[in-house]
Image 1: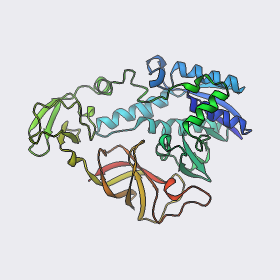
Image 2: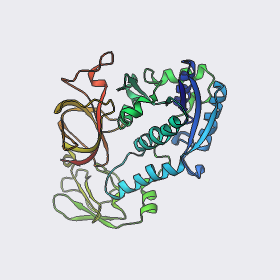
Image 3: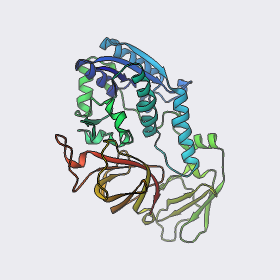
Image 4: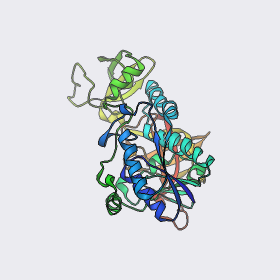
Length: 367
């Protein structure tokens, strides 16, 4: 097959490209330029898609003896990731820009261009398994990225390759060392690449403007503080509230709600964060198979969080979930992913039922 290897400049994409080459595919490496001013992106261990990452990707392609290109996706990135990030925060929701980048850039804009140029698939360094069109968790549970891939459509997955799904991170680094890749010991990237100094609050104030509002107590309605932008808060936040008085019981307060129109941020005890009911829209069935609802499933609410059992139904195009146990810090804008659970048959020849993705959606309401 003709395979386009998405080269981020890190160890994972380097090994994914190498494994694709060694499997006999005709591989071309491409690095995605996501900023017109790449010097403003984070560098070193905290960033991705920087100038230094482009150089690291080129060196790997040179060692593999494959063609290497840099494709400019900066306009797509600005429109589909950065603008979405700002709009979601302005609306009082909590977005995941890395997930949106996978959905809109790596497996939409990049994949569309690859197919138009005659490539059969795009290979990436994500930790997930793809077997007969079904998306499964990675063997390395700690690095599993099936959550951020669960928003992909069946057609997108049909043109995707995840060579690292059966490996652990230490194994991937060892494979990189064996092949002489300088990135073998390169630290993983994390945080938001387009916020250079890591100050998300400062970035939002700069882009959206200061919008003063009140921080109020959920029980009494008493104003406890003022803020310069409700977008600086997230559901479940405890630190940085700058309240002018302690709670009557002396316990910490947490952000319970955000009202973007008035700018009111409501705070209260940790018990106020308990969520048992979730409604999500923009529902995707990445495996192309819609189960007979209602179903029992394992529910994951964060990229690196655990799962909780629950019941799921599909009503008027929305996922409606009832969790067996309350979860905290669940906010509109986050993604919920359902994995196989009790009573659901795993696809033949694949891992166990609780390892495969059933559906994903964007949370719009909680209760």
